[in-house]
Image 1 (tube, rainbow, N blue to C red):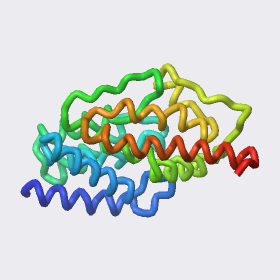
Image 2 (cartoon, rainbow, N blue to C red):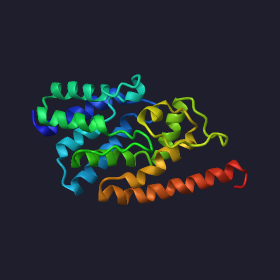
Image 3 (spheres, rainbow, N blue to C red):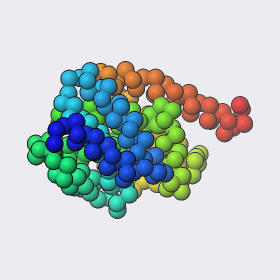
Length: 217
């Protein structure tokens, strides 16, 4: 099977698996991450076969929905790619990207080992900021039964991935614990440029949110 066929089969598999998911980690999230990754990857001269497969499979089995098992994503991706006929070098590369991609806390560095990993991590992080990022954040907060905002509970800069995973604060706190940090953690020039406007929109949104909260607007 050629590379284009494997990518198309993977799209169909991921769509069938994730379509209709309600926490913001659905097929359309994958669709947008894939679009971001293609745009960035082509500008960066990355291996687009690896980039496309990693973007499509990065949330195929998110640890957040599988009891914190950080290996279920790479394991599920490997099982699919072996079935689809991908070569071992590509499979290992894609699985490493999936293993390393996630944000793990304000105080935790998550460097990617390859250009392709940097591209896919940036594509995923762009989805967490801006207008779509705001929408996804509140969708996930509702999914987890979190308060929208609680002014009596301060945001926390988590020092470890274990601390970050245990966090269950209100949704507005998540802006300070993750979203507003992502602009300065982009790897590629293309993503850094795309992140500027999305970051500014989040700052404007929070300013409006607080004014409405106080009855000022």
